[in-house]
Length: 204
Image 1 (spheres, rainbow, N blue to C red):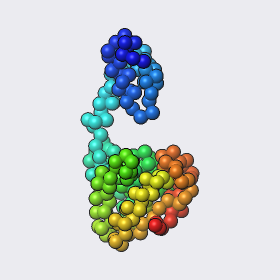
Image 2: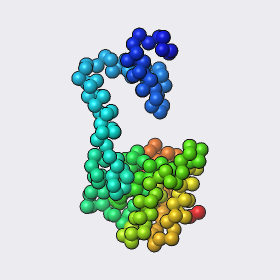
Image 3: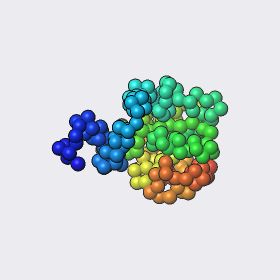
Image 4: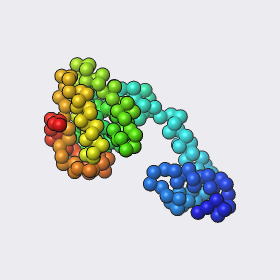
């Protein structure tokens, strides 16, 4: 659909913004915008406010780098969590996936991605320094590498192993109930729960 086919510049701008999201083509973007047009003004205003709040109200937890409404996320603030056990994940989706299994009572460390030369993501682009601080603190006894079973995930696991191996901390990885090539957030809860409980020492 070209610009000439849009009867309104506002409509075109809205479609372009929706189409910029991953997995959203222009046809889907157009349907979403038309759906919003059919809703009442107050509902659309609330939708817009929720989008704006993503940048205005959401912060990163100063302890684990998770998304939060406050300086310390609800998981890190929970005194019932085992702070000697740290689970390293790629993003917030993986935190939510593991939490849904109700099998893990430790805390998390969110890297913010994985090493990917193809996409230009280097170790310096990830939140690794904070993880090394935890490993060297003497209070953490085990760090679980819970990254997706992909080439990028395995590359990141190996880098972290080389970085953290000098500290007196057990380095483990998920059991291979998670199939090679699988994204963690799409793994079913039972399989993921078993992979956490049956984790293995990390080996090169």
